[in-house]
Length: 111
Image (cartoon, rainbow, N blue to C red; front, side):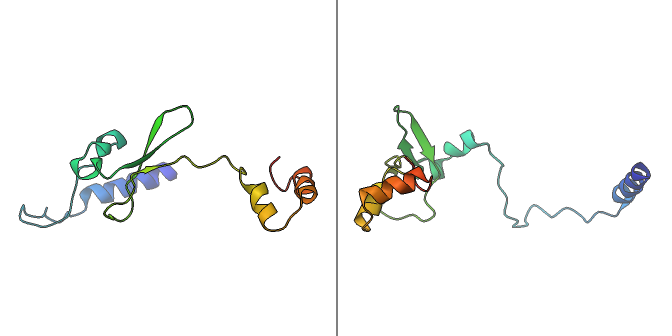
């Protein structure tokens, strides 16, 4: 049944009246569909891309910022390891070393 349904739909779609194509003077927005490598090389984006350097020295390219701000940084520092600042933040919030150790032992915060 599924194949006969598909055949019926295909027959209708192929024989349906098609609207005429728009004239060359139509102002329909369009653009080529590019792969990621080609987009990085587009003149309008090349100078707006952002990036960072990961541990080990490899540069990672990131997308441009959502808004163009004059003087905005284009290079960002790599974020710290997950949980790197958890204990200092907890200590600043008033937790003792023993409380932090208990939270780590319970799996609440990273060791």
